[in-house]
Amino acid sequence: MKTHPITGAFGAEITDVDLGAGLDQTCADALRLALSEHLVLVFRDQFLSPEDQRALVRVFGEPFVNPYGPGPVEHPDMTLVIKEAHERTGVFGGGWHTDLSFLDHPPRGSVLCGVDIPPYGGDTMFASQQAAWDTLAPPMKEFLNGRRAAHVGKPYGIRWAPPVEEQAMKGSTKRGDPDADRERMHPIVLTHPVTGRKGLYVNPTYTCRIDGLSEDESRPILERLFAHSTLPEHSLRLRWTRGMVAVWDNYETQHYALNDYHGFRREMRRIAFQTDGLEAWTGSA
Ligand SMILES: [Fe+2]
Image 1: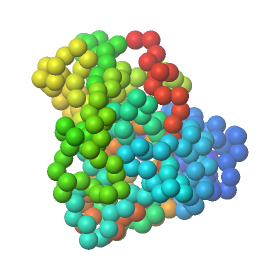
Image 2: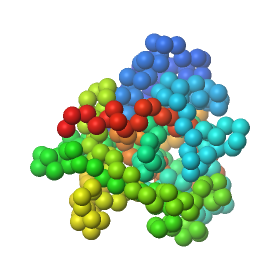
Image 3: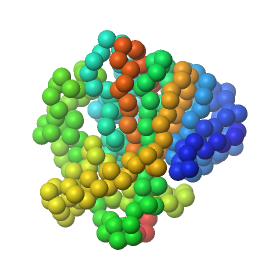
Image 4: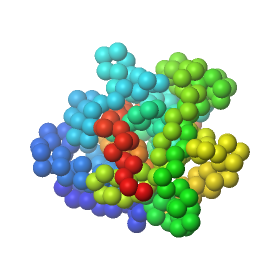
């Protein structure tokens, strides 16, 4: 197994490994360590079956069922992210976010397989929230350390729900849930339990205010953090090919799905995974 960093900040392409050939303990340990160090792992030409994909997920945690977009009853942990060639609406995952950060226990990460890939477009962008934290000014770090922020599931609730015609994957995603409007407080700064590196844990899709401040008072600080955390220097852009697999850390990165492939079909197969939750990530401020 060889590791090739993608940018100076984070991300790695892993070669000389066959993920579908069964993963022994040594290989699983190496993959977990690589994810801890690089936050996004990319594997080309793997063409994993659903069973292979689930076995890879189990290297990192337990398969997670998305309460707002479960898969079919036979395998609710597996979501097919499909946009047909004729569809013109918004894309599932457009806008910078970490997945489901408004839950009490957001998923720890995801394994995404490229099944049907357009000839161009449909890239996924990632941003390292560790790189974002590292480059904040010391007084800002001091202000944020030990504070919490409120997250709400705006697209899934009632209060902030977008118009129906702007919603992607209509019918397959649960909407109008009053519980999604309930604020969940999470630490603004997370400490990685393996590497000890700190990362920002706020995102423009779900984070609405800083604990102890109103939304108006929080806005200028959060807007500043959102802009900083997705700078090109903290980002990478993944161009998909068929059979490619990406694994990402959902606590230490944000991602953004580009919707620039009108007229082409795109199909991805995703399984998220869960570990112990955010408690182990508060570290010592
Ligand atoms: Fe996402």
